[in-house]
Image 1 (cartoon, rainbow, N blue to C red):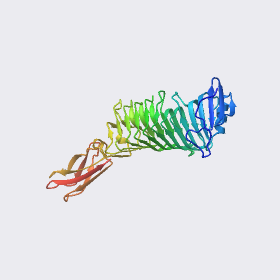
Image 2: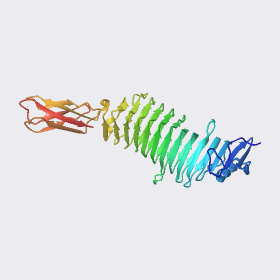
Image 3: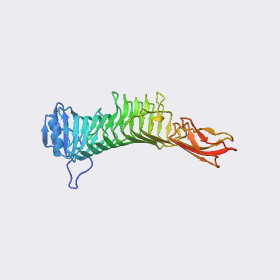
Image 4: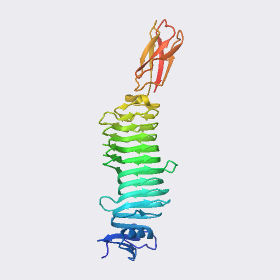
Length: 379
């Protein structure tokens, strides 16, 4: 029985839209691979027919359920449309310029997708994939995909998962973390959603240049966990996570800017700094309800009035007094306090007793009249 699918020959002018030169399909318990002229390439074995069909052509249409004993290997220069399910796909050995597109409305299109060996220039569109693993590969785009679990696990030798972009995609794992990164770099989330993961939405370890733009991390146990990594959030919402919106571990840099919103965590702690040595920067357009552990930061910069990281003012040492206490208004203990007397002091001037709420300005001799002093404090 012929299968009515849009398989077309190559015209003299070259490729036309929706032109497939190989059709691999399931019919009952049998599997077939045919070329654009209807000639049989393979029959009966699901693994063999799928592999031979992919090897034979450039533009392949796959229809049916392919539960395989071994993963299908895809080489360079392929465009594959999946209307059904393939249990395991492998792209390695510097394969490049591959596009895989989901068709139909089934559950999963791909069970396990494994990328390694320097594979690059890969595009995945409109796919529902259960597990994605990228070890050594880059220039990879997931466009409008739904993903259950993503593991970007590079090698500490320097072969990394790099330049991977998630565009308008959704990551949801009801059993564990949504995405794990280790030795990954230049990972970009644009207009994507990481939500309803059982544990951490994005667990980022030993990775760099990770950026979330106009994305949502919602209803996870923790939205983002950052350890020995650098992360930027722009126009991003980390909302209603059960423990924390952002967890900052060892020696990390986190930059929050451009109207990002980190709040409504169940614990009431939206950002937790758990270890010393990290950097946190927040611009004045972003909103954070509660930050815990600011005193552990190596550097903190925040222009938002709720969490000022620097402030200025003027204090007055009264006549016949040798000190004044200044409430600096910062949300941390200042690491730098500068004072400038605005009239000639009767002796030396210095700062002491710097705390999370105040500091003292002292003079060695009491002035005969009030002594105005300008001050600057910075975390």
